[in-house]
Amino acid sequence: MADGMSKSVGAAGQVLGCVGLSRSVGLTTRLATSGEGEVWRTDWPGQVAKLYFNPSRDRIRKLEVMIAHPPADPNAAIGHHSFAWPQALLQNAVGSPVGFLMPEIAHSVGLFDVYNPQRRRTVLPGFNWLYLHVTAMNIASITQAIHAKGYVLGDIKPQNILVNNQALPSVIDTDSFQVRDPSSGQVYRCPVGSEGFTPPELLGCDLAQIDQSEGHDRFRLAVIIHLLLFGDQPFKGVWTGYGDSPDPNQLLSQGHWPYGKTTLIQPGPLTIPLETVHPELQQCFLRCFNEGHRDASLRPSPAEWLRALKLAVADLKACRRVNCHYYSQSYGHCYWCDRKKTLGIDVFPKAALSHQQRQAKNQAAVNTLVKPLQGAAKAAATYIGEHKLQLSLPRSPGSRPQIPSLTLPKRWTLPERWIKYAVTTGIVSTAVITVVLIGKVLMAQDDAESVVFGSLLFVGLLALWPRLVKSSDQSEK
Ligand SMILES: [Zn+2]
Image (cartoon, rainbow, N blue to C red; front, top):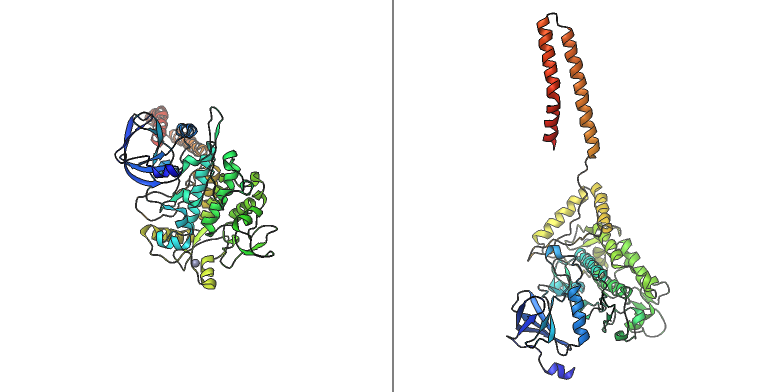
């Protein structure tokens, strides 16, 4: 590795062929160097190149599988890259593969800048609890899409997730994923893991020797969602056991978190209580860190997190006192106001509102006036969850984050069959009444001339009737 670091693998101006794309790219600026290689900006706008110091055959084969089988991006419709997925192998002048091309994730910050209150205040002021919920929701949805193609993320950590100002995340470092070749069944493992995110059953294991499963990712996903909603790691608090508190890794390994069944950890003075989040989310955390601590099969899936987060987002309400406060209606009142009062700390301090945020706030006021609609909104959220539709923020470049909008059910209408019955009944009864009236008029006539004229008119009307009905039918359509 040391001699790998000392030499450079790419050079400005170097031209590399994009395998399968019948074009090439030129390297322009080196963006980063790591133990395994370099990342370069290219002359293809929006595409960056990752070059390895010493790419092994397995490394290249793993990339080929990924390029051939990309997951469906849940945010493709809004032009967002949810993962920096390999697009094409890059080869040098003699045709040897040296790395790959991937989309550049621009205008984003690391997840730490989003969940850490101090960093958030500087980097993304106004990014409130609603956006944190939506970010978590989008991460769950992205994880679901990646799992659906048989991949395991393996090294989920804040440094590998970037977030833009519209709460849209992008997973980077995708070439570390665990990849299974669908044709041969061969598994290309994820040899790296991160402290604080590795599930207890993998602690102390050589990850290079282990085939991982979705269940392992489920633990990591829960820790990430906990960081977003509570601003801190779950396995942390005031130690109530004998002696000094064990180190964070031991706490995680032994399942000591403030809401464990036999825990030696109590919530600390700054711990945000579990009750502040929606009851469905509370259940997900309890399941993952209690029953699911040892049994990966009991941990909530990304789809279950997605469903709970959608319910939670629909349940969030804007605070009347501080414009950046959102709280769960199920909790009853604004926890952030309480906290500000008792601890003197506000993790979502008042911020200057953007146009979109003012609109969102007005919308929230309207929502309280039309309370009956909230039931419908919840039903819509459930519907969206059940039908696995995306609920992500609308994208408008350069704008502040916007409130996610729920799709309300369509305006209530009569079933089409009922309308047809009503129209037919109307037509038939009108016809009957007309026949009876004309008959009565004809009977009342004394002179033959009127009877003949009236009868002709009657027969004429009868003949015209089907035409009139047909034309009225067409105009309805
Ligand atoms: Zn408040």
